[in-house]
Structure formats: structure tokens, C-alpha cells
Image 1: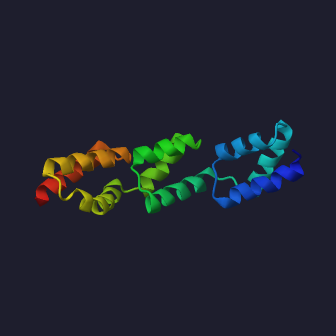
Image 2: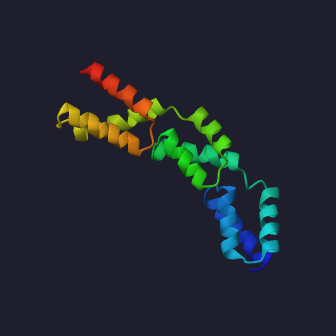
Length: 151
């Protein structure tokens, strides 16, 4: 595929939602086998300011916090899969994610499903749910202690 065809497609790909460098490179590789065309398209996207991993991480974390909250561990794993540098991901995640607050909001949504269960079973469900969402054990223990004090 020529540069004139691949570049507008790449711009459209990025316009749907922010993308990481790794995602863009994978897309360009899928669309063209010619390394020079891919490099030229990538450079053109960079010159237009369409490739920005830091902006992507901010967007990703905000989307996760809003629509499908996850703990720091899970967020970091997702960002690593997207090709984000560990230091950049950790810096932004640590700034923008309040695990305890997110976990509390998740518990409030799920609590009604567990309220008829025995107390020990509720705690088991709570811990498992939060662990699957990537919350740290320290956060889970703190919330279990808070729930224990409210009994």
C-alpha cells in the first residue's frame, strides 16, 4: 500500500480513540509491508502531534476510572500490553488513581448482591472481586477492616 493510501487510514485509526505508539506501529505493519512507507507514515503522524504516549496514558486511566474501574496493578498490566514504558505508566497511574476510593465505589455497587449472604461469605466475595479487578492486597485488607468496624 502506498503512503498516500496508508497515511489517511492511519489518521482515521487514531481519530477513533487515542492510540499508543505500539498500537500505531502494529497497525502500520498490518497495512504495509514496506518499511520506508511505514516509517514515513509514522514520522508524519508524529509531526502532526498524533502520537503521544503520555496523553494516551492519561486518557486510558481516565476511561478506566470512569467506566470500568481497576486497581493500579491491573492498569499497569494493561498499559504494558499497550507498549507503554513502565516508568511513564507508574508515574501517571500513581498520580491519578486513588485505589481506596475506587474500590469503595465498586463495593457500594456490588454490596446489594451480597447482603443476604453470611458475613464471612460476603468478605470472601468482596476480596475476590477486588483482587480480580487488580486492587492491591493492602487496599483490600483496609476495606475489609473498615467493613469489620462497621458491623
